Length: 155
Image (cartoon, rainbow, N blue to C red; front, side, top):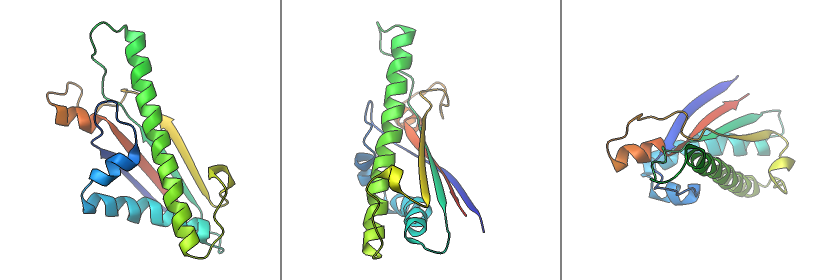
């Protein structure tokens, strides 16, 4: 049986990129969503011996950089750097959570992300190419643009 899930988690502050920092500020419902739909399926697949697999694609997003005096190339570079860092931080956090659950289940913890046998964690940076709010009118809307998206497939 194949299961596919997609959702976004937004709310990063300006130039904030650490997923753990964002995660700690989320309400319990959103934290549970991440565990139920991403962490637990991935950890279950990695600890499994019956052939279950999991692929997690993490897209990092940025808000537009509107800093006066920057060239368009500098703005794009800043947006790409932030979205890359968000995706990578999320991937690293997720691997740590998977490792903890695999260890708790009595499984062998992979040495690193590349050593996982049944889980693939992939990232991509989108910069500000896919804004939720094209012309944000508040800091709250800008924070919604600064997000990570999870695409999870288990099979």
